[in-house]
Length: 212
Image 1: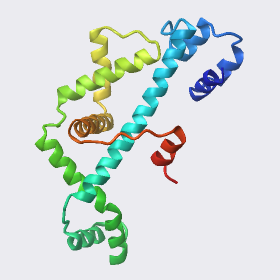
Image 2: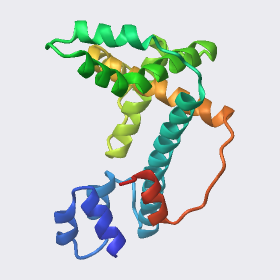
Image 3: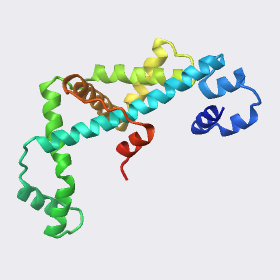
Image 4: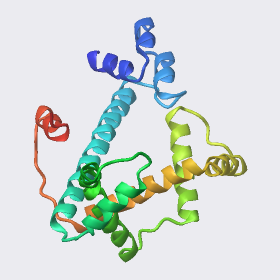
């Protein structure tokens, strides 16, 4: 019961929980979308899947961050530091000293190194995202989102119209391209790097994933 309450609260549906005396279809429809869950057993399975998915996303993000950190630290890349510091000083919108430019460079150094590593990974391993890749990815995202909220998937013509509207927004194209590229790089890491599995408790995981 407490787990169900916490799930509802996390979904912003605390009021729904308070109003429901029973775990009935009305509650299921409000939480999971119409007719997507019909029994308590299905509800428990759905909650379990949601929890696993939530933690998997967090685990994937940590794996991505740790792998990037490893690549930056283990790859010998010598940046033209002196030139970049002077360039940052000259190109800054506000007037800054050479020491301030140096501090800015030090904050940006890892990011610049990873950009070079990422570009080589993408080119060497054919991880580029083209228009058709992006269109297919956007279509799948829209379908999944509709299913998540219990909405019927529209016919092909209507779906194409929704995708076209999304992809007419330059900011959305940039965000989705970065998202898909990141997914491909993560999958590449998983397929080509050897990781040691470590079993930890929930509290230990939180400490490792979110160090103070």
